[in-house]
Length: 403
Image (cartoon, rainbow, N blue to C red; front, side, top):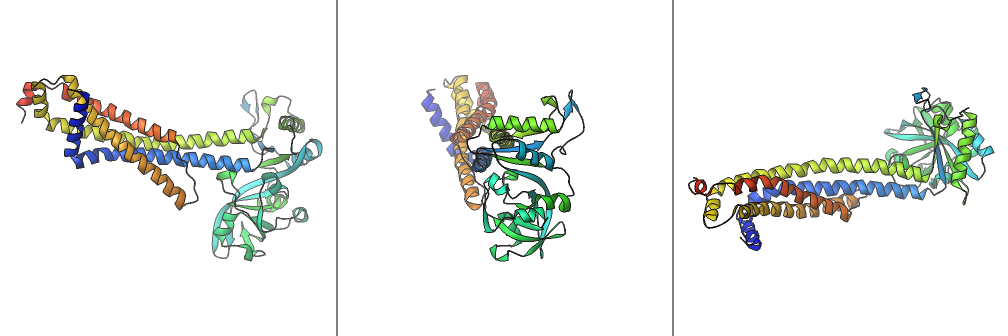
């Protein structure tokens, strides 16, 4: 049989059983649509985080405590390595430093009258907005005098303020953080982002209050540093590391109980996290594609059984085994191909709906669409081959006598 004739026969067979063909394609439609939608969510999250990190500037450094080890064995000291004195020493002894902020953070319950929310409470210095390029939209940030006097004042992230029902008109009102009363002096401008790269769902208080009143901590979660414009960040990193090793009495860099992160490190970490997230979402969605392939195989097996006599007649008038194989394989490919195309449209539409109906951004790339379509075609060939091969192996005499 000519290839074009085989395609025409396959299309005619599929059109003759519209409902069955659609049900066979449904799994592929859902699978491809899910893969594209999930990959677009992951790509959107990655783009969003990259944009937020870039907005912080290129001369930001963050020092975080790490698990210290000697000869590959943990010493047991973890996340209590950085102190307020370390932050003060960086200011005094490292060149090319524009600003430093000690940071203490923990999640806590916030209450304003009958409204409650859980947010990240960040104890920081007055330099914190300058270091991270954050802006106050309503009111003001707390002052250095309030930091020194351990004044119980708080600046709310935009999302936290919204959840508590606080706007610029409520400045001066008092909220409860862990049952302790704080005066709201400002609300930060919305920044966006996700997880630790966003300040929108936070509450900022003086680090002195966070350490001694709220959390009872004598160590820091991290130290944020902003280098002067044009500074050699590699040299600044080296100077900070040398200073902290001296203060922590560390002779071997492999035993460092801290790590200095620059923007490249932060971006790499964020990329790794979002890539893993995207692969997980895509993998889960790909399972539905495999289920769709199983559905095509089942439908094709039923079709082969129903068309046994037709197969016998075709073989009797000269059709070869490979012609029968091609016919049923092409039917499977057409179903997976059309299902993949419809699924791609559904996935793109779903991504647009998610993006427009929420603050969560999505990003559909041509690569993700091509990958989903290629995978759906591969599924069609893989799951369609067995029914097609089974049809090709049928004996024409047995087929003609089949009832």
